[in-house]
Structure formats: C-alpha cells, structure tokens
Image 1 (cartoon, rainbow, N blue to C red):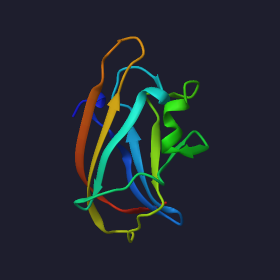
Image 2 (image 1 turned 135 degrees about the horizontal axis):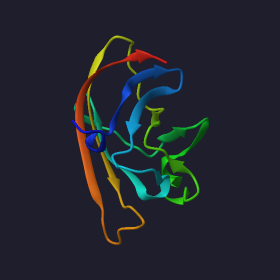
Image 3 (image 1 turned 135 degrees about the vertical axis):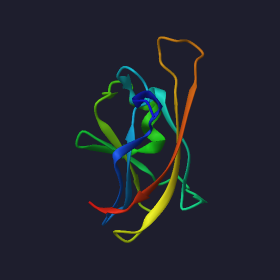
Length: 128
C-alpha cells in the first residue's frame, strides 16, 4: 500500500487509561491543515464506533473531533501520525481487532475535491 493510500498508522491501536488510541496517517502527498480532514466511518471488531466523544491528539495537543473543522492553523505533517482517542472503547493488551477507518480529505487548493481513503487492518492492541 502506498503511503498516500494508508490511513492507519504504524503505531496501530493502543489501550490507554482513557480508552483506545488509534494511529492515523495523512493520505496525501503534502501536509494539510486538520480543517480539511474529516474522519469518516470507523468500526472496531466489526462494530460501528460512535465518534461523538472522540478526540484528536497531535503534537502534544488534544481537541474534540467535532472541532476538527476549525483547525485551519494546525497542520498535519505527512511524516507524523495523529491519533484518534476513543474514550468509550476498551480492549486488553494483546487482543486483536479488525479496524476499518475512512478519512476524507478536501485539499484547499483543489476546489470541490473530496477524496475518500478507506483502510481495514487487523491490529494487535498494544500498551500505551
């Protein structure tokens, strides 16, 4: 899979005291503001995940996923992973889960474009 097609990061899925944390990669060839990235449907273990309490974690900061569209001055650099924090989910370290994630990107310099980027992987839950 080419880097611009991958949305699940190498760090995978981790169990934390605050829920599960999923590594995400920017599926584009250049850095973009978070405001043009939309986290689409997510399922873990075949179950759709409610993202209403999800958080984005990046570069030492955290914000509600619902505020991602306002992050016009926060850039996601292509070499970095961002993390989707899922407070309502839990899993034991060592368990495996099938994770399906879809990211949509709308680069500001290509009017009207909305690219969909789905990926499904089986991940082993790591310790955070």
